[in-house]
Image (cartoon, rainbow, N blue to C red; front, side, top):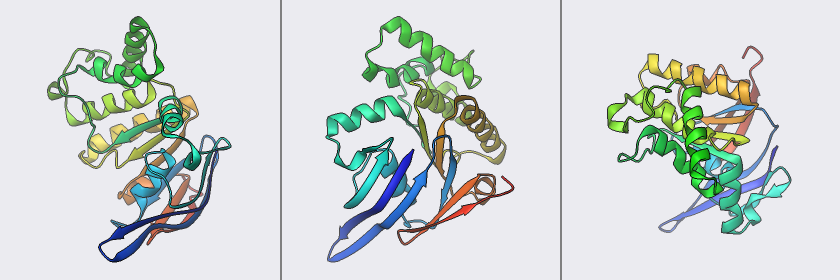
Length: 227
């Protein structure tokens, strides 16, 4: 479970001070599926980065299973990310010289698994997203949707508790977008993940059980009864 209390993130731009997050309070139960929406520059990605331990707040606490991420050392924070949190981004972030399987294996290196176990788990993760026949393909040999599936497999291969996705369908056409969302939602249900996604796509936001709207660093939370 996430418990955010009074989370503020302040940036200085020239002589001006901007609050990307302004005293955010938010609870995200285990297994929740939450979508974050809002205008560009409103704080969406900043909030996701806080949840993932990729950035630290200026003030406030970010509790994950009772541990305040804001107070952890960099080494401990890296360990939490390696073990508990998977990330999927809009731009795939695959290494172009590595095969699909090798890209997925990179997520397992910090866990110090033996090479054989890394290969086996990476292959199984790719099979779970429908790419069992593409293990040896380079990113340049895959479509955009297939590359995002590799990125999803890489996020999930370490068996995280949390999946954070920042505009995961932003570079995809409508048909491929729907395919990727089917994959993500299926994996959320299958693994009981806590799934938090930033998206500008209102059609996706309407399908989420809970919607957080963020404007000028402040949030409102809506329960989507029909989702």
